[in-house]
Image (cartoon, rainbow, N blue to C red; front, side, top):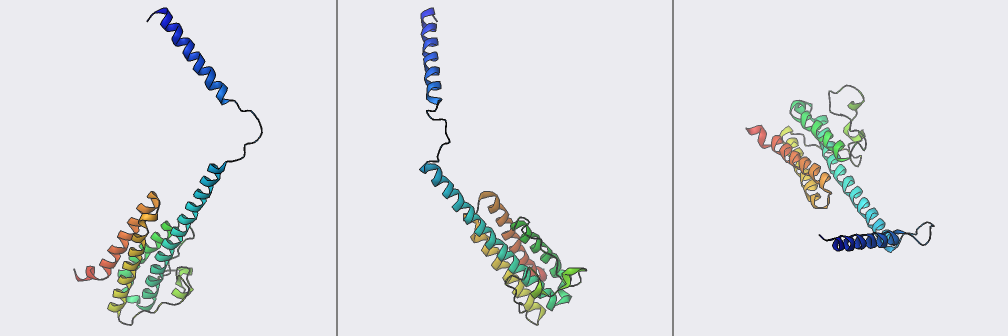
Length: 191
């Protein structure tokens, strides 16, 4: 490169730097009022946050409804404890995970020491607070519990497209576990 070429390059670079620095200075040093674009972005962010919070509430409600069904079945049929209690514990963990520690879900299954020995209707996991009717026949109760697990799984699956990626992965895992619960409550017993 010749000396003239280098000088021209240096002059051009210096001119560009000066122009860039001049463009960076502000004419008024006062606080800047957000423009329409920033306000629109803030409104959209708030809308997205509200939608995500509503989605989380629906997911937790579906899990707690299932949890209430487990509690009612265990209260009505204590002989099913060995088969149903592990699934109930899993459903409680799912409800807590979906709510991200919203409030802990106590173990209210029969035979558990401590404050969790209250009736299903009085527990925080009982959803709307009404007692859940359970069939008198244990096999019918298991079928009904399996249907509730499938319904919760379907509810979680339906929310996948609206969920943010990380929460969608959690919902998918909980939905798959719900499908497995339904299988274990019905078909799994025959195997």
